[in-house]
Structure formats: structure tokens, C-alpha cells
Length: 276
Length: 276
Image 1 (cartoon, chains in turn blue, red):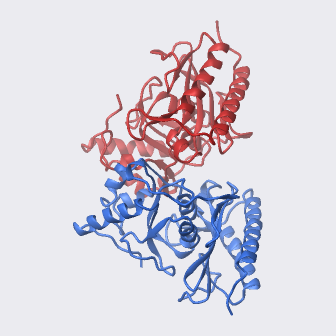
Image 2 (cartoon, one colour; image 1 turned 180 degrees about the vertical axis):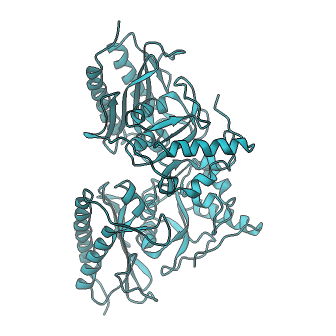
């Protein structure tokens, strides 16, 4: 049976996210329980788990036939994109959440047979909601976002972590040097879903990272697509939405320029490795 | 005659800044007139000039005997720190102002015979006011900031532009590599006064740059001093508040660790050059 109540889904999800956000805000005065996952700066808190359980519960109760991939594992995982798939991050930017108590987001992207249909990214403390239903325009709160226009590298503000500019396992530290130097400036906010939403909203001109998981970028890519933003892996290949992947998201023109630059650097022998 | 009405000064300045901010916010729907100064990404707009003229006018009318150093040159400049000196930036983070229409600040620091007395840093769009009178506690809006405690590099969130990690005239690109890799993460927001205020507020653990002007850091250093934050040039020397300078501002402990690291790198032959 085809799913066709996207407008009702949007209304419901916005309501669930606002309720989860109220809970998160109220929790900020309580002590957090923090654990390390894969690394010293890969954290999870009791609040990541609690928010994910709440949202997964709502999705399962309302849409029992849908599949869910979520950061803390309360979803059912999935190995294919058939049917309707939710990509859910209860707190994107956990390090910001723990250390700054601001600049973190709840991110939910909904795909149908691999095609982006609905996106929700909510900056909890900034009270800024980026959302869209594909084909119906993207919104920053109540303001409809304009289609992204082209820009030259010299005028571009680029979001990029310092990680990819120093020795690391994924990318030769020199590949992005010329991009950084030619650009108007770089920024780094530490919450991928918001950084992708900022590209969609024209607050940033590009976002680059060598390692993101489906729940980090699922919503952001749908939002970008809606405003004509371009995205791919760092090597220019298409992103598989079930995989950890590199991502270069940018305005048209700038995306082609940056991919071309990376390809030339790789052709000269510099290394670039997708996450496994 | 000794100046002693600091509480009245604080009240006045907060009022002037709020009025200037109202004007700035209202201007965002009008087209900006943008000019380049020293470089492609060193911008000035009609609004920088207009806000500076307004604030300089208020200071001159109210405190004709005080001196003013300000970014766009409507102050009188000054070659010494005798008496009362205002360091004023009408829009810190002009690139953010132009490109993002957010994350810029009005910054005013007031010094008496070279000693910080009053600081005001207002995030115009975020409506967040960092302010203090020295000796009376620092505030983030109405919340009194706590004294900064020590932290290890592994737990630290460090604000640093990518500029200083790639070939540049001021610092060997490898000096900060170990700091970046050992830290919990890096951030870059592109508005020095706010980045210094964030260190004071514990939202960041350190801020590092090789090039700032008195109006960029004048207020931030006063705020930091009030909460026990440490600051110096990158080489550990004292900052001359009339000079363009490098700045390393950090929590106690972390500041010593980072300065020690930089000194060791310089002793090994890597270069570090103060701006002229």
C-alpha cells in the first residue's frame, strides 16, 4: 500500500520533536550521565538514549510498518532502502550538548524507496526549525528558503573540521589546503545536521567532512536537495544512505569546483579513503 | 580628577549598545554597501561606519575627556594608555554580518591607566549580552559567570581558525598540530569578541589567534580576567593593549600547557611572528 499522508506525518513529527526538545531543555539543570563510545570525544548521554527511545516509540506506535535506523540503536537497523526508512539522531552534536549546552539538534530524515521525502532538523536551544516535504519547499522556521545560487571559491564560507587538515586516516592533510586558503573563510560548529541545514539556508556555502553516519546526514541531504544544493562523497561518487560516508555539500558551481580540485589532488597521488 | 561613576557608565553603555543593536537589526532588510579594506575577506559596510559614529558620538558627548580607539577610525586613536581609553568595535565579525546576518557582536572595553575596568560584548542576533565591571563579577545576560576551573587538553574544546594550521606568515603550520589532535575538538565561529566571551563563559576552553586588533580583544580580555581566565601572546609574553597581537586565551592549566607546547616547538626551530 502506498504511503501518502506526508502532510500529516510532518505535523506529527514536528509535534514529537518539540515535545522531545522541551524534555531536553528541562534536563539541562540536572547532572548528565556521560559515557564514551568509540573514542574519548565520541560521547553518549542518558539524554541521547531517552530522547531516542521517546521518538522511536512514537514512530513505531504510529507507523509500525516503517523501518528506523538511529544512532543509539533503539531502531531496528536496516540493510535495504525498500519501503519507508527513518534516519534518526536524537542529539546531533553530543559534544556541544555536553560541553556547551547549546548548538545541538534533533535530526530526522524520512526516505521512501531510497528517495528523500521529509526532513526535520531542530536546533533545540536556538529554537530554529529547518524542515521540508520534498517538492513543497524547505523552511527555516516559517521562512521559505530560496534556491541556492552559484558562488566562487573566493567568496565562499566553508565549514570544515581541522581534523581533515592535519594527519588523519581518511584524507591527505594537503588535499584541502588550497580550498581553505582561497576561500573567504572557514567555520566549524560541531553539529553536522545543522551545518548541512546552514548550507541549505545559505548561511554557509559548503560543508565538508570525511566521516558521517546516516542519522547525521539523512535529514540534511533532503533539505539540501529541496533548495538545489549539491552533495556527493568527497570523491564525487553518489552517497549510499545506508553507509558511513564522506560528504561534500555545497552550492552549485562551488560543488563542481571542489570535487574537481579533490580529483586532481588524488590524481597526483594523494590518498582519500572512505570510512568502512 | 579620578573617574568613579562606573556603575552609571555601565548602565549608559548597555543602553547605547541596545539602541545601536535595534538599528542594526532593522537594517538587515536593506541592501548593504560593502567595501573591501586590506583584503578580499576584510570587509567594511555602511553599517559598521554608522554604528561606530553613533557610539563614538555618545561616548564623546558624555565623556569628552576620554580617549577612543575604534575599528573604522572615528575615534581619536591614541598612543598611550593614560587616563580612560575606550576600545570599540561596532561590528565584530563583519564577514558573518554580511554573509550570515548573525553571529556578530558590538564590543566595547574600557581601560583606566591600562587596567581593564568595564567590558560589553553583545551578540546582536542571539540577544546575548556578556558584560562586567572589574571586581564585581562577569555576566552572561543576567547570569553571573563562575570562576574558570582547570581542564586537561584531552577534555578541551578549542577555538582556532584553519588559517593557523596551513602555510601563513605568522606561525609555522605544524606548531599547533599536536594541540588540535589531542584536544576533544575544535570550533571556529568567526567573531573574536564572542569567542573570547565564550571562553569566559566556559563554552570554549581556549581561543587562539595570531592576529587581533585592540578593538577585537579589548572587552574580551577584561571579561576573561574577571573569571580567572588566562591570556597572553602566543609566545607567552604580555599583551600590549595598544597593539595588534597574537592571543592565546584559556582556562588556567590549559593556558600553561599550550604556551609550554608552543615554546618547545619554537625552541625546535619553528617560526612564530607577532603582527606589526
